[in-house]
Length: 280
Image (tube, helix red, strand yellow):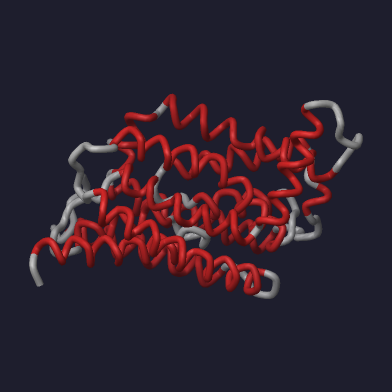
């Protein structure tokens, strides 16, 4: 296989990984960071590639939740212009998503250089995979899992947002952070998962399009064409994962993901020690 064809194949494979892991509490950014250097061409695909391919998975969210998001958007605009019904639950949910997006937007801008640089150290990624696996296990074991999203309060909306912001560190997982916070606050597994999907939409799309415009026409580890292919693959696979994941979490625990995170973290630490992977 020629080097050009290999780049396209690797990009498609990374898109597959992105689609499979974005909505699971295992950290898609960690997987791209770990797998990239192990591919024939080698090297970290970069924060920009990760952010852009996440556009594909968030488009899957927009399509899957299109009716819910449509109602929320319409109700929000009505509330802004003063024509909405007082206490409209869709408008309230839209405002909660906006408020919950503020922490990750503010911290993302404040720590932009670290997020794109030092925080991508694989020792940090592996350690975070293990530590947050234990936090998720505790939340899943001891959380009351009683509340649905109708019980979502303004304070909980902020706490969900702060939990999402922890995903700026590869290894935490955007869905994992918000789901863990939801379980700790007493929400059901399905409610926490659904809200994590909705909460991610504005932040991920904003980050993805920012990186897209920022890197447009500039050379990078992976070119524009292969990145577009990876984004398309991530969209198709991500939509399928949403469907399956929401069905699973209503009846199953998160323990398989906990074990997977711990094993992956330990394997990465081992590969770093024997020199197969480089920390930077």
